[in-house]
Amino acid sequence: MTKPTHRLEYEQMLLSRHELLRHRSGALDRSAYVLLSRIRIQGPMSISELSEAFGLDSSTLNRQTAAAMRSGLVERIPDPEGGIARKFRITAKGAGMLDQERDAIISGLDKVMADWTDEDIAAFTAYLRRFNTDIERLSGRPWPRP
Image (cartoon, rainbow, N blue to C red):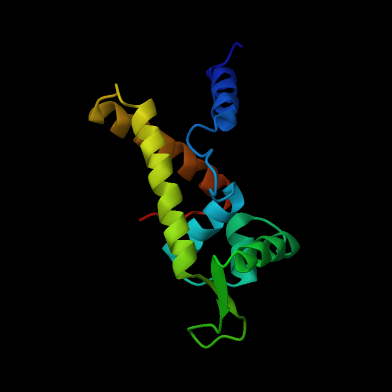
């Protein structure tokens, strides 16, 4: 491991394997969590908008949204702006489950970072945001932030 990015790749691999922050019964799967998070921050979205936002083909998004609809997490509605395409919006159940999942993840982060100062957490967050926004810039798919 000669370059700093070699060490970063290894740490990223280790991070991706940790289920401490997500593993619990009844939890949303990763794809539903990300899908609901995007729709919540952006508002109702069509399959084509979701496909563009995620960089996935429409068949993949059709499967994910169909599963979310079967679970009662999203519903199809007419385009609020009068367009032809129907859009997906989060249901009350989906919003509640998203909030529960986010609270569980934050609780896990609080445990992991219990000995970190607020300044350390803020610095780590700033670097992680920079990392994510650089990936988004290169992919051409920015992610809206609150």
